[in-house]
Image 1: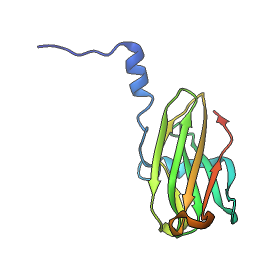
Image 2 (image 1 turned 120 degrees about the vertical axis):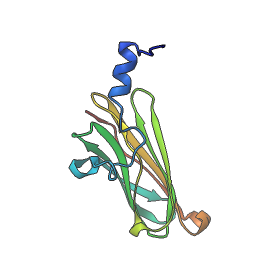
Image 3 (image 1 turned 180 degrees about the vertical axis):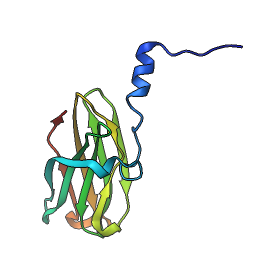
Image 4 (image 1 turned 60 degrees about the vertical axis):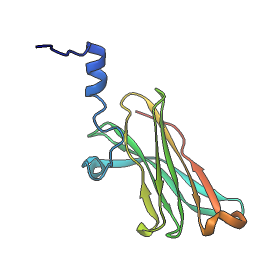
Length: 137
């Protein structure tokens, strides 16, 4: 019989990131969340077209990004952590214009997010982008 053991550093890394790439609301982490950074989603042709928020769950020690934009918009939500990890989530039109990406563990480090949105095929400047500032927990 062979036993498989993780080195202490590997075991610690695996143990402290159990929520990476999971939905914050299905996991229960979203229930205790708060907004730590907010920015506008802007379009050159249309001005402000939404809001991007960097969320933090103290319970789960995770960040994720939420977006509010036009119901007809689709796009991508990105989350980055200072240790080089990232998560990208594509959303479709609908859901009342409220969308969120998956989480990354971010205890004792900085995280930030970005989004790009488009509607009506993105033609004629019907697209926008937004980026949050860094939040360090």
